[in-house]
Image (cartoon, rainbow, N blue to C red; front, side, top):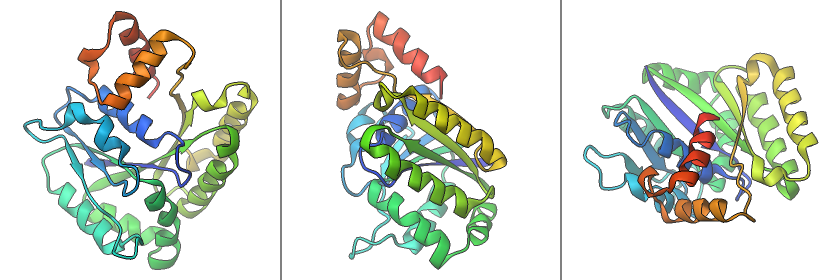
Length: 237
């Protein structure tokens, strides 16, 4: 069964592209994994996944989900999912932009029921997994509001993983505890709570790592100490 990972969050700058980059680095040598940038606004993954581009067989694509009015087109979404399912890969990582993520709940609640979306997955013989990114600071409330909205709509129909962007929770570890508690209380509605992105921007190795991420470098670009840190991050995914 093919697996489609939806990396989503309606709040911009929460860390969706960072998560997608780390997933791509983990899967760098796995030619059965494919990455798609659905982000119509910033296109961060197009920049940060340069190390996957130009490969044979292909490992990366850009696709659009919005119509001429900048609205999520359900037909485009289904056509793209169908097109991807016909490719010879096992796993697909989909980086949704903030605009696309923001409109997903309306797709589930107005255009289709979540059960009908499950029928799409079944027809494609695929598992849909929703990775919801949560950031701290001023982003915490909108991120958690979005989390609650998605969890309420999905109601255990699909697997949901919460990805907590650690860097943005500096000085407020109690909020991470709060998120873990929320995940536990939700039971089958949230399968796991994972931490990622623990980079201290005041240290030289971490600054260098973040620069390499922005430049779209692969694992071979990291120095010894940097590689140890990166591998630690990948082990948390």
